[in-house]
Image (cartoon, rainbow, N blue to C red; front, side, top):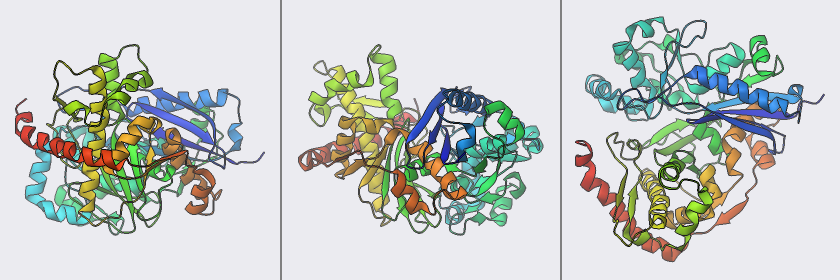
Amino acid sequence: MSKNLLMGIDIGTSACKVAVFDIKGKVVAQTNKEYKVYYPNPGWAEQDPNEWWDAICAAIREILDMKKFSADEIAAIGVDGQSWSAIPVDIDGNVLDRTPIWMDTRAREICDRAKRLVGEDRIFEISGNDFLPSYSTPKLLWFKVHKPEIYKKAAYFLQSNSYIVYKLTGCFSQDLSQGYGIHFFDMKNLCYNEELAEDLGLELDRIPPLFKCDDIVGEISAQAASLTGLAGGTPVVAGGLDAACGTLGAGVYEVGQTQEQGGQAGGMSICTDHALAHKKLILSPHVVPDRWLLQGGTVGGGGTLKWFRQEFGEGMSFDELTKGAEDIAPGSGGVIFLPYMAGERSPIWDPDAKGVFYGLSFDKTRAHMVRAILEGVAFSLQHNLMTALETGAQIGTLNAMGGSANSILWTQIKADVTGRRIQVPASDTATTLGAALLAGVGSGLYKDYKQAVDSTIEITRVQEPNLTNHEEYKKYMELYLRLYEDLKDTFKNS
């Protein structure tokens, strides 16, 4: 039986996705399973990795039960996951506590202290990233300070994908693309800096050894095979960051290519050939060798519209909700939405920031508010792109991915706000496809990333910016930026 299928597993914030692709990138089968986010205290956001694993096992069994293929046909498996986890596990891989996720900001005081004692500029020079509570490093320190018994018992602190790779193979790993969450990871030389780790009060042996994202870490173990139905011995690669895998799955792997993300969260990733850092942005290695990603990651993405639909659009589909917004002129009649629904990440990095509707009046309708949400997310994208230009980064056509890319209206608004051409590959599967492509290259199914992308990525539509609308949006962009500056001090007291 020929082994010409690839499986991609994605550990998202609200659900896991599992998809199987043929060698041309066509979906053979896919499904997803939801799990919880826990908010036990203000500023905390946690998940239970055991629930991830249970969901993934259920999803894989469901796919195999579809009888569209045999487990023996899967050539290799790639796993991607959300960023900035800190999963404490013992030497047997047992989870010792729930992990703070990327939205968690409990370590704010720890960050302030580390910057004073170790030096903010020194940390940035090595890591290429500011020392902020969302990242993994402050969370490790938080465990050491506030839960020392767990810290001492932990053999390793894992990332989301490395935990699932362990559950599949029994092998501990740390892929290069997720290294950016650990500030003693040397961004330019792609290795750990032992001296900085010691100065931060952390030990290198708490983090597993580094692997390239397409390295085969291990094979499906007998235990994993019995729980999932996968074939024992199937190769599993190290995998990588979800945003980086999504970037690859959107066809972005050459210098200057840019991915626009429209999932639960928003953002962008610009492909570079060197470590091009900016304190207000995020820098990580790409999952593709010898490439880096200058990223902007926002809290407000598709999740903002999902929230609005839950609270104010009961019984309406997303298409029904956005249809009325098509008739509203650019600028939403002066209604501006700040999409800071759980604080905000780049480029303002303000955990106190709040979501805001500005400009409401009796003549405004739900359609005005919906369009303002679509525009607010586009403004947050433009804010990140404007910041990236300060580094001299090349930004070309945007390749859109995520559920939001299915909306022609939302994509057009983003094109008009940014003034940039947007092309849309098969957006719903970009992240799992990227993980699968890593497995395809690692197992030799593709000879290189060019062949992998050329064989699988198909552009489904292209949307050009309306330059008249772009000029109109410039004044609303100025108001969007000014609103935050005017309100940021009040956010701290509310």
